[in-house]
Image 1 (cartoon, rainbow, N blue to C red):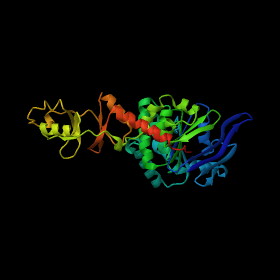
Image 2: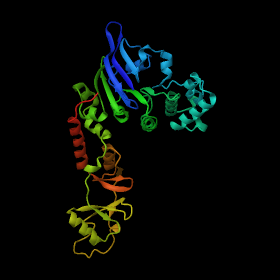
Image 3: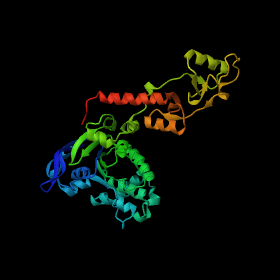
Image 4: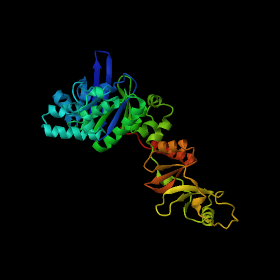
Length: 381
């Protein structure tokens, strides 16, 4: 846990970088500091590991006030990742990752094991990368080594200062997803600085938005920040498209899916007509006989005129399945599938099993419910 208690940082008599900031980051939580240039994001983060000394206020790691401990020993307990990585160019990847474990006196066998473990964790095969030098790596690979080095001595806290800001957009997206995977495994307490609200929404468990002068405007979950900005400044900063951004943090709610009837793939056409008639629907989802997985769709037109005898299997008449999306995904992913496949609906699956469909209408209704639910909750943080 990290707690800043009425922390202020002044430069001279007139410049206030951070003003009376009180903020708590729970254990295992990733808190993103975001705001315009010069709002005190990096200063706030650097005060946690005493690279910048606060003018007043107290900073706690767990229950310890770190404003009065040895700064060098403090930094060895905190991982630190910066935008330009800062790897030592004359050291191999393995030696870079081993920096802090060696400083605190780990024996060489323990260090070697930790280096191999961390390189695997960040997706760099030790046999291929351990003995390379930084200049032999791509930008994305160097950034991964930087994260591994920050995790070297298994610190409880990780500070990240725009770590993906200098990476090309494609590599940046991959690193963001890789970091989300990594954080789900290691569950560090993370303070992450960025100027990009989209990155904040993607990565943060909670977002702290600062305005000029280091004043905290809102500290809340991404969904709440997007759905219920605490001030005109926050609303302007997150953008007029915040409703679209909210799709990325709104999960699919299986309970609210549309559920057209299902027709087994081996059913006769006459049987399919009866199922549609009983449900009063024009179309049905075709599912596999054994596993219940969606395999296509069938309309009344596909089934032919009502006067036909209905001989034949649904499988031969159904339309291809337009798209599927896992029930654990977000509304953004569902919308992306709808647009990519130019589809009128997307089947939602739990594993392979069909659980319902999302249409543009039901997706919009789900987003409206999410915003409305946020508006009924009192603000937090």
